[in-house]
Amino acid sequence: MRRIAIAVVAPTLSFSLAACGALGGSGSSSDASPTKGNDLTVGLLLPETANTRYEKFDYPIIKEKVAALTRHQGKVEYANADADAGRQAGQMQRMIDNKVDVILLDAVDSHAIADMVQKAKDAAIPVIAYDRLSEGPIDAYISFDNELVGEVQGRSLLEALGSGVDKTDKIVMINGSPTDPNAKQFKDGALSQLGPKVTISKSYDTKDWKPENAEANMAQAIAELGKDNIVAVYSANDGMAGGVIKALKAAEVTDLPFITGQDAELDAVQRIVTGEQYMSVYKSYPTEAETAAQMAVAKVQGKDIQFDSLTRDRVSSPTHKNIPAQLVSVVALTKNNIKDTVIDDVFYKVADICTAKYREACVAIGLLK
Ligand code: GAL
Image (cartoon, rainbow, N blue to C red; front, side, top):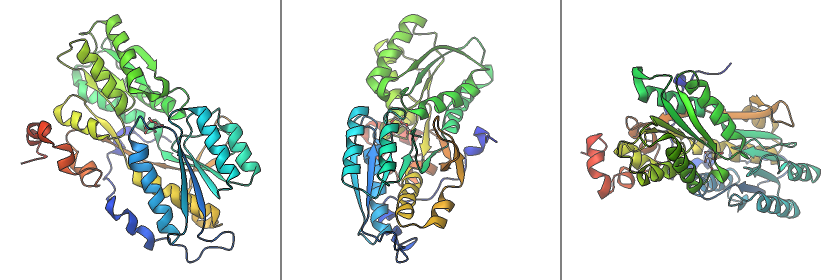
């Protein structure tokens, strides 16, 4: 059964990036099975650099956690595809040729990469889909509850619009890349909330999740709908919300509509402080990334009980059913809970957010005295 979006405003996990390296104590592998010791290599394939999460959080956290779990003997072989599916296939081929022990795959194109997943399988290299559910014979999947992400975004917009919300209110949807299965889940989740309450006047899928493509689509929506006729913009993530705001400002919209996002990027948190962006979705990357590292190491070392306990959920891809998975919950981030989320979890310091330009706005919402 699906959880209701409102249930996600759970207490955030207390986590410190600084403490990341100190996690070696738990689950360290003195009990490594004969399958493979600690001198293992985890191949990590991430999809792009346009959105900041991958290089700022996912990669460094996974790297540190693999080191901590292997008494600093294990390593991560990392490649980023820069939104190029062909390049990612080449990177994965190289990892197979290099005989890495396991691959964490965050696919640029979840369908196109299926052949490479099969090749890895043929070479007896397990593949764990990371964040995006890739097709082909993967061994497991670790991600957030992506439909819930969309529900949280949709529900937040309705909350912002308040009781006066009218079915004739016009909304623009700026969705993610059509090659990313998460984008469809975000969209479906958001539509489940917005569909019955407002009119989706324009809806775009954004090539490669690129902010500049979102900006161009938004400019087109403004031209067609009229700059004062849009009450809210559903943007699937923060990078694209930045593009949407640029388009609105270029059209000289002074009273910005409510705009969503996702990823808790620093720029977006600053826009939330000033009120330019209504919300983001705060996803605990440490939980996702550290769990991925644990799954990868457990898989290579043949720790089946630990692996099973990390993958209690089940998901299906277009090619495979009942894939062992873990889906991590998410939190809506608005100006009311910046402290309880990104500050308390040491994603950012108050000083990172409240630079001179944002000082006044930070004081106004109680982030600074
Ligand atoms: C999604 C991911 C989001 C966002 C987006 C853009 O797959 O779940 O967190 O970063 O890609 O890269």
